[in-house]
Length: 320
Ligand SMILES: Nc1ncnc2c1ncn2[C@@H]1O[C@H](COP(=O)(O)OP(=O)(O)OP(=O)(O)O)[C@@H](O)[C@H]1O
Image (cartoon, rainbow, N blue to C red):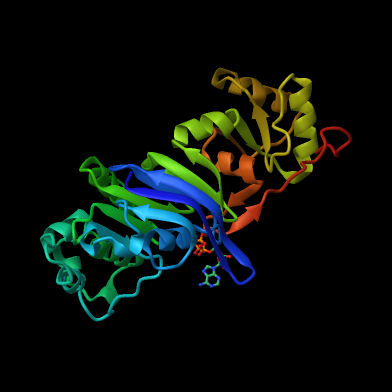
């Protein structure tokens, strides 16, 4: 095991940031700490990198984190503001100079997709995604055995995100252990060998994303965007036609439906003249797991949102 943490606890005054977290991460594994803002992800990264004092036991390469050879570890902090006037290449060259055996700077820039003219632009002239990729490059320049990436995809456009994801996969294939944090469940699901779902400083589940989705994600469903005034009528029409609605769902959704029967759903709405705007097939994913286990969904900004519970009852509503 590269990382072992047992019963890690950390308070800031009256705020409990970590409330008894245990995990172990094996060599070459990609482990994602997943949760909304405030769940404790950064505090756990700080505990594992030895930049904050915690209760409990933490070892990295069988040593206390603060004693680990810095040549072996790469860290992309969540907040990282390098000198704005230096070019991407100059910044990475600067960080390379801090290590005894750095990688070739241009090769590192190419790895993060910043070769060519962009690498010669001042940092302040780069896009948000290019800035973040420059920062990732500074964490890679010492060819670390263990890489911590705290919200690496924040502010990165979808193309840059895919590039970063394939970079992480390549690093792990080469034996690098990667621990990343994210509130982006889809990124975690596609990238990580295992995820740890954090809520209020505790893991609510740890495991391969596929296993967690199979265990807690619920069934596939058909989500219906129906004008609010027609929701009750839609629910009545569907139940009358024998479909089971997903209870307590924020949107109207039919559960356990075979894809071949989607036409039947449409027909039962149209037979009752119920209007609808869109129909979407939805497979359960990690977001459903988080929602099921915590009652909270995570917005695009990473902020936690309590789930909207209690849909309109199927009986007695207005008809369109
Ligand atoms: N230095 C600090 N002083 C006081 N409270 C802190 C400090 N660092 C974190 N906290 C609090 O501890 C809790 C966990 O914060 P942490 O930053 O670890 O969460 P996070 O999941 O990384 O969220 P974010 O992505 O918003 O940073 C939060 O309530 C936060 O306000």
